[in-house]
Length: 416
Image (cartoon, rainbow, N blue to C red; front, side, top):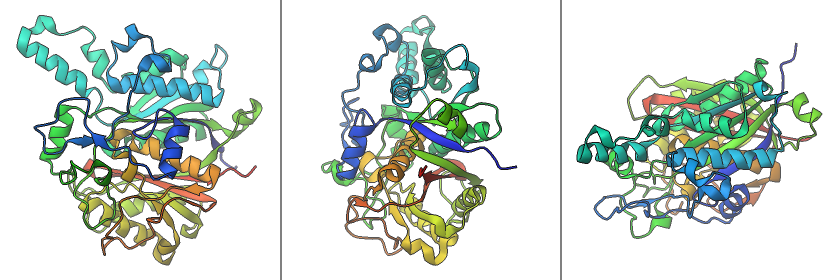
């Protein structure tokens, strides 16, 4: 018996490149950088003073009343705002007849870091009585999908996947699996993150993970696969997709943007933060996704790479791609969209899956900026010449996280 088919019927995004999918996508194709000086707090004493911020964000403009927004961490505000946009984009109406058939499954890496910082300071300054009863509901990661469910009425499985920078692809993969198993017919899925905070920036800087050499040239700081890369640029935002079982989508006349055909996951079992140098763990996630999709490696025409702009990740991902694709690796068009957005941590895979769906839907593949002096260890086609109209049938999106956790997703161009 053939398995169910799962399609993408809606997209939404809040990114350093724009406040919706259209603005983000247009700026991405134009090769614009969303990286700038940190404005969310005074970063003058920090070694890394740049970030990919969602600029001018006002939750009320996205249908989140001011009173409710004050009781949400910024990541929850992003989640609800993106969820509201997604409902409008997909045209799905949730009512008493279908509410239990709609899941909300998101990837979130760190949750309410800003809320923790704020109320820890209040605790130290004024004692326990200064801690708000909303502290815990504001900071816990599952309040992202939880609040989306409250705003939309979705009563199906409500799940958060927290697997560092692979969180969103694992969330999308879980939603894909739930639909394939027939447990639900549709899911709101993707990733959300808002950790451009003093503790977040200080913590990643202490790990020597962030770029510190380009504070005066923020647009040049995120430079995946370049020999002069010196770490990732922290970012924030949300990228959500509406996944639907094909016949369910057809029955309501939904517009289809792409089909999800494969999902794979693995772990390096190697180190807390560093990837296994051989790229074998990353390769297994990609191989598992190909196996799940029933595709040969030669079917993949485009990869949205994890490509964080760190020394270890970029060369290891290159090794992993070569292990999987062999000679075909040099023919794949690889985009490093973090060169323009920065690294959105738990939201990265959500935003990048949105970009991958748009690439298949439009036939335009995003370029990679700041690749000026290629690392000899990174010798594939990373589209350093800019975006190009190159239609392809299948595309892969990769996300890899601390703890050696790896995830890959394969989408197919919708041709029907």
